[in-house]
Amino acid sequence: MFCPSCGAKTDAGRITFKKLFADVKERFFDLDNTLFRTLKTMTFRPEEVIGLYMDGVRRRFMNPMSYLGVALGLSGILFFIIQKIGIGQLMDLEFLGSQSDIPANEKVLDVIMEYQTFVFLMYLPVIAFAGILSFNSRGYNLPEHFVSAIYTLAHISIITFPVSLVIMLFAPSAYMVYGFFNIFLMLVFSAFVLIRLHPYGNMGKVLIRTLIFLVLWTLGYFAVSIGIHVLMLLFGAVELSDYLPPQA
Image (cartoon, rainbow, N blue to C red; front, side, top):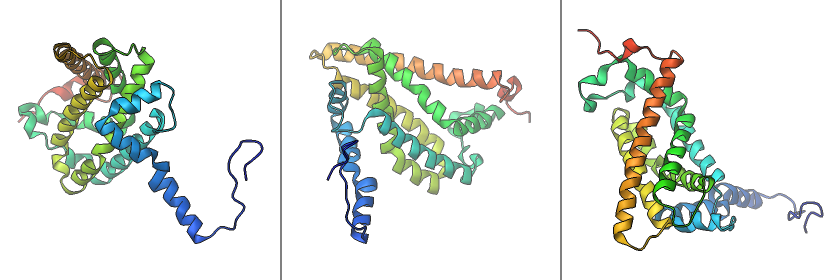
């Protein structure tokens, strides 16, 4: 019944359509219930998912790297659709004001979409460093805060995927506005995870630490944004002249 080398359960029976269907259901729709259990628990009780993983309980929920893999896979689907639609249809930036028509905007967006995985991962240290400097009642070290950040960032990406997909397919010109909402949601959910994961009891302490986290996260976000522009300038993807408004 079990392999003497690795301990895996063996099934010597003939393959039938019923077994094929059960195998597909288990691997892609059930995932041993870990994916859907992780999604539900991370939404309402993130401290349970992250806390149990830190305590060594690694089987009840998806591990952070697998969860991140799901998020990156879904992001890849969105990028494929963006390539088919074209960056130009996403460039309705009038809500940003008069500086929205500078040539750099389209070049920056093009690079961000092409290297979306790298840009996505750049926010992990922002959440981790802001978290360890503001919330740490459990005494987590920096790698453990990175685990918390991975769960947080992956969860936001996964739960917003259906809405992102619908907007991308049916209202691509509104995607940039929706992107700003996603950033706000990432900020709020990151704070929610830390508040649940690191209880302090005193509401005053929680509010002060939340404010500190929001400030640190915002500074980190702008640092990432500036860093992207600097890297693009260094590698020649944009030029300083691209930041000037087009002449009439």
